[in-house]
Length: 281
Image (tube, rainbow, N blue to C red; front, side, top):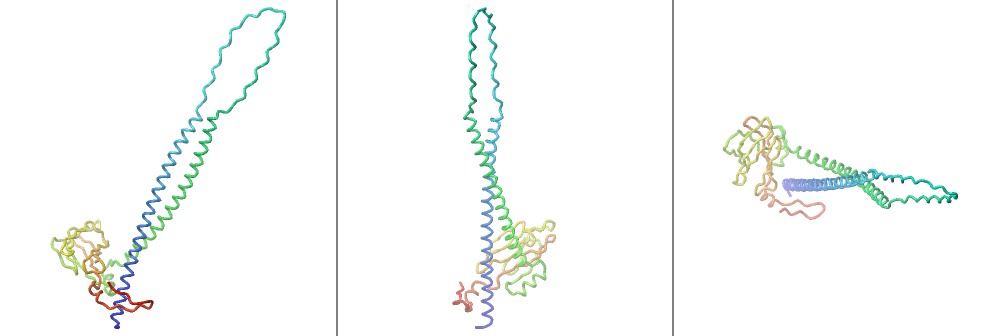
């Protein structure tokens, strides 16, 4: 097998690995975002339960703090004139004092209050744990997003020298363009482009593209923001990058896969050291 065939198989394997890695990173980012939303929802539910329990606790505390009604003093009995008698009656025994019996309703109130306080303490612990989980999940998600962003930024050429380096790699075809503002389409590699608006102050632009004989408009695209276009017959999407925005003019490049589906389908496969050769679809 010729050296050219080995090189082609290596390029195809690298492309497949990059696609698998990108899909895996995107799925992990989506899963982390869903987990973060669920944690936020549980935190909101816990806060609602705390507010409800706090209102119940306040009402019970106010009921216990209310002053008891003062006893009404009985009016003194009118004095009766004493009758003179020779014999005195023995004094009546003093009435026995009644034992103060605690109202069972207060016992129930105190037991409910203790239960609510225990629930509040449990809810506080759950909120602290949930906040910690949300913070850890957010840090992990931010780290993965930053890592993915850094990898994407490494593949974007911001200057003409970076574009030249991409061309030397030979992995993709690079077409540079200098596009003035016009309603007419200009052919650049596999696409036709028309600049409709360029905002140098805010670093954004509006672009119209012809994709498979259909016009596609892109509004408020930022500087260095990749525009992905999928064409029939291409194994990977085409990338449009603008790395300079001037007044009524933009400069950048188009990056497309070096080989099409027809080229990859007809190319022979290289033998794998761990098993049979992979069949290209």
